Length: 164
Image 1 (cartoon, one colour):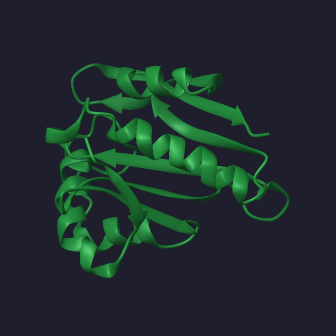
Image 2 (cartoon, one colour):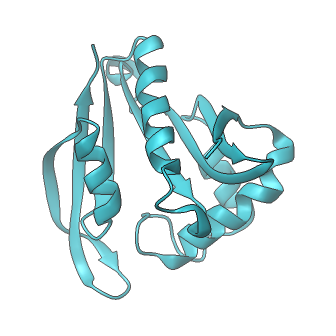
């Protein structure tokens, strides 16, 4: 796979929206409302606190996207946060792994002390396994903190990875 990660450009939105829409509508991994409209999704993904948005592209086709920035303002702004979405047809091909590794590199270079994921649904086993493989640890979980459309209430994990 000749996957390339590059900064988001406004011309990418028509290719990104179907990816975001599919992930959001499924309602099984993100805490966004499944009926989130396009304008709201665009603001959630592109606006602050995101300071960097990337797309994963192969042969001119966008396969995924990530957004990242500080987890909190003020005294908490030395810890990064990030989120990832991969097109359904591209899952299991290393797109997510490439984006997480890119985030780790970027956050270290940007001077962050660590990366925190605030809300990873326990039902998102693939993401949890990937994050563990890349050095993230589970700090805790909110019992039943995520309402999965098929499994009902599942835990919502908080993960962290220190950066050198």
